[in-house]
Amino acid sequence: MAKRKKTAPKKNSNILTKIAWTLTFIAVMLISFISGYYLGYDSAKKESAKKEQIKKSKRASILKKLEDARAKKERSSVNNRLKEVLKKSAKSTTKTVEPSAEYSDASHEYEGEILPKAPVRDVVRVSTKPKLAIIIDDVSVRSHVEAIKSLNLPLTMSFLPPSKYRPNSPALASKEKFYMVHLPMEAKNFTKEEPFTLRVSDSQKDINNRIKMIKKLFPRVKYINNHTGSKFTSNELAVNRLVYALKKQNINFIDSRTIATTKVPVVMKNYGTKYVARDVFLDHKMDKAYIKSQIKRAIKIAKVHGTAIAIGHPHANTLSAINESKKLLKDVDLVLINKLY
Image 1 (cartoon, rainbow, N blue to C red):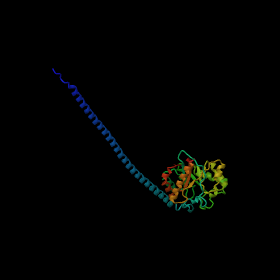
Image 2 (image 1 turned 180 degrees about the vertical axis):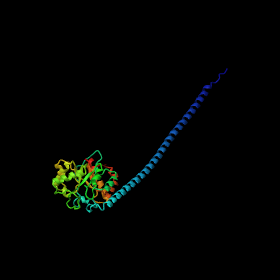
Image 3 (image 1 turned 135 degrees about the vertical axis):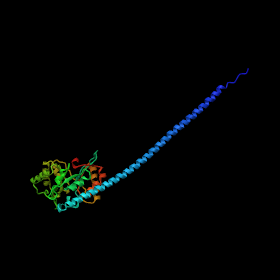
Image 4 (image 1 turned 135 degrees about the horizontal axis):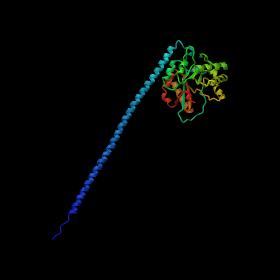
């Protein structure tokens, strides 16, 4: 009797092979599907991020345009405000301000054709922002105060003592948290001087009494700088009398440097007191572009020496130039004079 052939194992092998190929195919399909899904997701994610970045860029561009427009409008608004309040001042004081008090620029402050140079100082490297103080001299009427304050900057107002025609400077100063006094002193050639100008011929008693009166008019005054004063500050004896009187009233003196031969540094050294002086006059020329260049110069000096003092006046061009230089002023810490030293 013949034996039968065994075929079951072969059939089983074929079935297993088919199952293996089927599983492999399914695995490949799954991998392809998953890979495609993730690749597509990643691509979609990148595309979405790209679109979002484009949206952000557009938004930033629109915001920048709006900000530029707002800044331009603000500059225009402030400039118009400055012109308005100063124009109002001119109208309201036409009958009350002495003709001698009117001038077209700040050249009345210093003596000679050449502006006296800034004091020589050491180069200082500081880890913090350099500091700049801007003093606005000759403040004497309400429109000056309003125009200065409209800039929303820490500018130091230096008030002229009261006179018959501008009697309200002490009252205006009393409303400010901080102020200086711009004390008139004798000049060599300037003849349109203020009332009660300190003179070289004044005795120690005369100067003591004048400073006492200033302290009475401006009780919180801690700093005084000279209005004109080329003759007075170039006389060592006169300066010595003044500094002595100021020290008795606990008042600091800032030299406006209206003449190159100022004796204030010598007197301050004799008293063992730090000499503090003006570095830059902003507006001895009334051209706005020039004033802006002087602001840049003051910033540069502050960066070299750590501090700087600039002096300007409440003219529309001066205040407009300061307003339009706000971006530049971000390079320094603009402070009141009492925060400088």
